[in-house]
Image 1 (cartoon, rainbow, N blue to C red):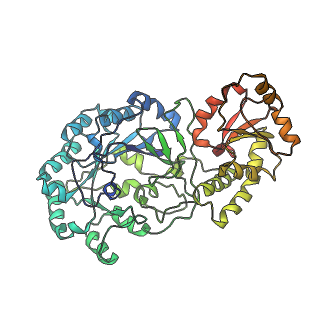
Image 2 (cartoon, helix red, strand yellow; image 1 turned 120 degrees about the vertical axis):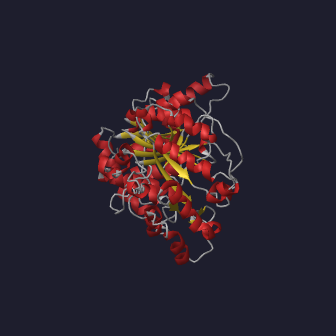
Image 3 (cartoon, rainbow, N blue to C red; image 1 turned 180 degrees about the horizontal axis):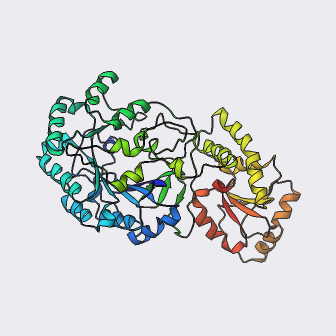
Length: 487
């Protein structure tokens, strides 16, 4: 087994949970609606959408519900299908749904060795419900089945008085302390969810000697301004609908990867434009190497523990997958692609920043080089002219040798008398009439007669599949997403 190529944060649309943790970040936003959620596509279709070939290799699929993951009736089948595709699969669970845990642990051994349970140790809820023994029984059952695991407690002020009890039961049941991980306030820029002074907070929870927590403290509220490959080496997937976003923290949609499983996935890095105050998921993102120049321990070292009997939480297969950095197994962007995507994502995430205009100016030459290398000298832009990406692209191409011949109106709807002679004549003449009237580039629609171009650039790049279908009969030889111009 080798290092995984990408991390897919596979978010299940289940908001039901059998716990009511006071620090729940979904609860902060009143998102715990108690629904199991549905999938827009079958698990078999989703399996086809997430093959190793389409994703570029073996990936780390991190399955997590918005409630308790294993309450979702489709959770086990989805995990099995991802394992059958050859991926490493993490299951985030509160460790109490025994039936589903057994189903996963009874999968064939070749699948189990790539299965990783991330047990969330909600001590107060387990204690209140008299489920502590059941929780640790399930932890030991998973370990005995040959699966990898980790046990982590989300730090919170209400548990501070019970820290000695937590540590004692962990040693009794596992022979090693659990990890601890920061809780966050989603309503306040992912700040620490504590009323304690930071130093006291760190002192209390530092007694667990958890490298996971220790690394988080070095990154909390440290805004990242390096070039980040979130969106390329990491994406967050809405498992119900198929939409991918560039980061655990969300962001603008990149593509629906379920819509057409034969369509390549168009990854696009967020670059130097991180809009969040800090990387709250640094423990998995930065440790996986999405900012190549940043020194950080590998994810395996943050997750593993060595027990008193010498055994470890991670299996050799999972340790290999988590033991390196994405930057070691993926090609970095060319200078042109890096420059261009950084400018495009600045438009998405920092449109009013002074640096955004400077990035666009630098990107013009990069796009010109790449398009001319591909034999593209004339283009049409498919867009709603009022949308910012359209104006941005026109300004980007204006100083280059690439000629924009017309704008293809993406919002146009054919009217009822489409077949009339008047409309027929209008379609034949509109392009030239608009040129004579000084409209440059002319705005036309897919029914109008227009000159041939080397490529059509779709400004609404998340909708590329549906736009391609709409203009399929127009005879365009090449259709490119806005994210692809510097590929």
